Length: 159
Image (tube, rainbow, N blue to C red; front, side, top):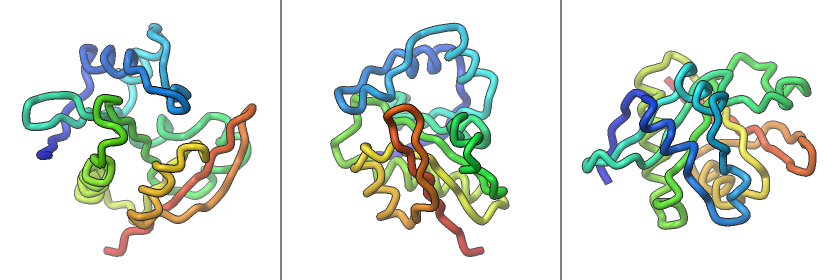
């Protein structure tokens, strides 16, 4: 799968907001609202498209990738580049995750001077945790918000 990074726009944002995942991944479903649209359009969110211009997923960088509750418990005290990702549910569970996330990591590494990347993942999302571990991320911290446990994971890049 050949991938390219593009800028977020209203059309892509509406597609993403309306993605519906099967349980237990329905945790990641969004409700269409002006707030959710504003989040995607006014923060550093990018789309990942395939060679047919189909929206494969997205990623965000910085504070938008941080869980607001995690901020209150010190999960983001280090000065590390945070990343959040989402994959189109039409492509999940089909073995595309490693290529998709590796592409994003390469893009970030080429366009950033930071030597570390941190992500936050719900601990029940075992296939994501497995992928991140396989790609060199190490668990740093766990915290819980309501009934969901989250893990922060960090990957150090060597220049």
